[in-house]
Figure 1: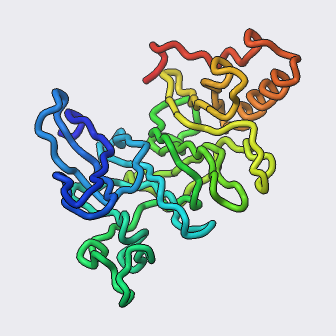
Figure 2: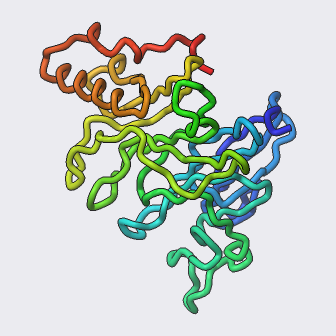
Figure 3: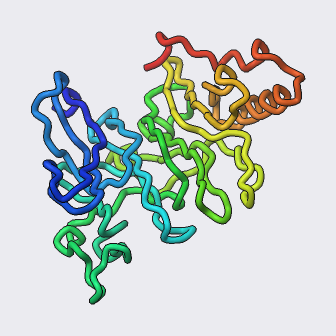
Length: 277
């Protein structure tokens, strides 16, 4: 049972890597027992797997992955996908499919350094805008939101740092089919508006982590407001999300202008540990 194991994102850095023996920075997902025993490589070729969660119905393991840089504003898309045991997901030799090889890992004749691995590259379920810097993800198991959100996934976009026009800086929702319990094939904005000037980029917040509370509310953390940790830590996303954005944005603005104190921060953004699912 996968729920009886830890999953860690790890990286073999040299040709002598005991996990993969590849002369490349090849990230893997390591599976090990609760007591740290029986360490095995569950899957590999994942560049930077940050969010991991089991689907509440199927128990399939899904991840969010931050893809590589330095290939342009629109390459390579970050993604959300179900992980297959022993699957290969491209890094660093290919991306998105077996037809797209990384130009930095080609030989002088134009072929890939590792065509054997390129041919195994899995295509992710959902592609995000490149450089969105997707961090956390959670499946929604509450009842506060409309039924279409049940068993779908929310993901936090921390936002880009190396793109001509900033992108990300929001919470998105990934709908799942209610019969197959698989992603429908797209994502949609849920909480947005943190990016005030893409050319800067200028923002008033950068989402990081997500929690689903026992009452069905969705919480997200934000490390973009360095004025105070207590104020930025958690903001509640209620209903369709717009209420939370207005509430948090108004409070942060007034706090910076000196019109509000820490005690005036949104009280719904102070969850108790017992409230977290």
